[in-house]
Image (cartoon, rainbow, N blue to C red; front, top):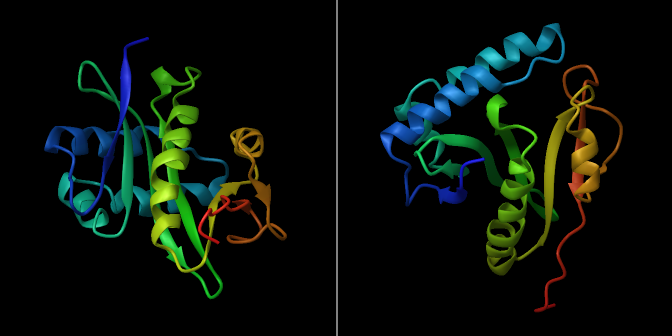
Length: 178
């Protein structure tokens, strides 16, 4: 396995064009299909991330964590954004993908750990509300067990798209200021 590291990108710090091209390619080649309805949803997802310029626009509201390898390749990504709800703030993971050739090497855990140790505390520091980590996952996604292992639990009944996805949350971090 090549040596890898995590880099964070957002509206203030953009990846290089080559990195963004690799991210767009990762979406085209790795977004999973779990059922017939996933195909059209995936087309919409990929359309928003088709070119580096498309992704630069997304970085105005999202934050992107990339697993970068020595050879400047992109092995995986975690995309998230803050979502302000009435009583809480969600650090919401919209996508987590690992290149098929790099799967099984713990890269999703590395991405998630970086998200949890770097991004979430930065949100908590500035939030006026309780911050939960959250994500939605397809009922047939084999990563469901990984999310449970990381401490996420199902919130309510399956929802979205005819009950095909679960909304999962993780208990808030203890805020030492409260």
